[in-house]
Each structure stands twice: as C-alpha cells, then as structure tokens.
Length: 154
Image (cartoon, rainbow, N blue to C red):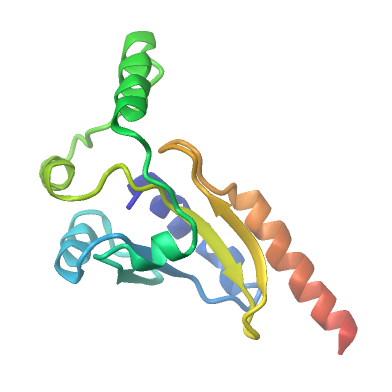
C-alpha cells in the first residue's frame, strides 16, 4: 500500500464520484493490516480490501521489484537527497511503516485499473517502481471521456 498514492486518491476522490464511478482499493495485505493502516493514515472515503495471498495482483500482471533494484534505487535517492521522506514524522505512522517493512511484501508493485459497470477495462497502469503511480490526470480523462461518451449515446 503506497500511503502517498492513497493520499492522492483521497484528495481527488471527487473526480471518481462526480463521474459516476466507485473507487475501491485492493491492498496486498490482510484485513488486520489494513485496519491498522486505516487507523494510522485514514480515514479514506473509499473501501480498502485485502489480497493477502496477492492473487489479484499476480492475476492482473503486477510485478515484484527485484531486491537489488529496490536497494539501488533507495541508495541512489539517499545519496542525491532526491528520495522523498520514507518515514513519516508522526509516531503511530512511523511505527506502522517500520513494522510493515519487516512483515509485508514491500517489493510487490501496485497499479490502477478502471473497469466500467459492464466489466470493460477502460484503463490500466502497472507500477514499474515505488515512484511510478497512475497519474490522477490520466484517470480523470478516462472517466470524463467515458461519462461523456455514454451521455451522447443516450
């Protein structure tokens, strides 16, 4: 679960609802971890679901970043001071992140999928690394175009 991407989704949740969409998040964690995450970083105006065995992630083609690549990325970011603050300053949040690094699959990359009510895939983005998330603007365009198309059709 990328807390920064989820914060963006929370901030821009209205672009989904204004376009008739329902936003749901599937995290590669158990329900208890999701509850703890929600207590530390929430609340969120959308549902968070767990996929502790990562079945949906792998079925959708998500990848695990190799450990050496992640370590190199973190080391390079730290050396050039371009790495965003990894640990939150708030105590409860910092404890959650520290624990998650030991107990969760931090190498599994996320993504974003937009599927319409008929099950048609409208958009997909699979993260290549921890900094590569679906641009909110792209998702907004897809949702708006889909809504406008259906308005013209009716």
